[in-house]
Image (cartoon, rainbow, N blue to C red; front, side, top):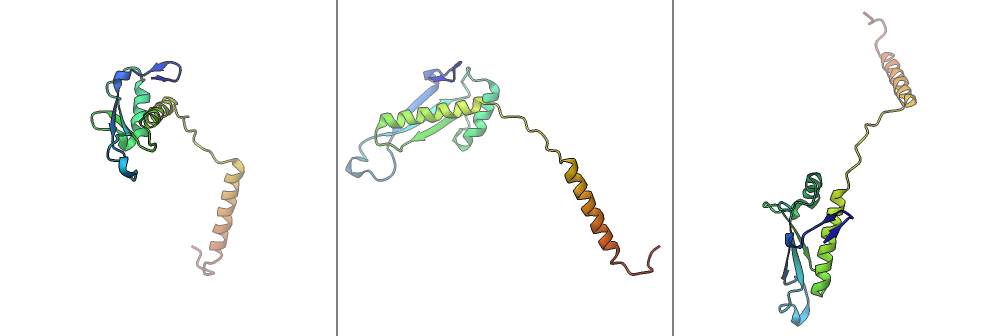
Length: 139
């Protein structure tokens, strides 16, 4: 399975199981196994960089198992092949998203004019409160 231009996932690292889909489907629903459960062995993968693996674990969330496998389930379509293609497409999109490094956050700094406005407002409020004191109680 080709992801991006340089990364190729070995088919042996992807395991597909066909299971019965949930929900209504008529008389034929209990006979066909059209849903797909795709397991990608992330712990055993050697082609993805370590930083991308960490990002993928964070992106996957509860879809990751304790043994390091990513489990995706697709059962929206009635046909097995469409569900299979959807599960593989979701895996590819997740991996592509994990390969993109997030931009480093730059700390915001207030402008000089806004700092001056805050200072003048603070001085005015201080002046107003100082005028509320009793006269003659200055020490």
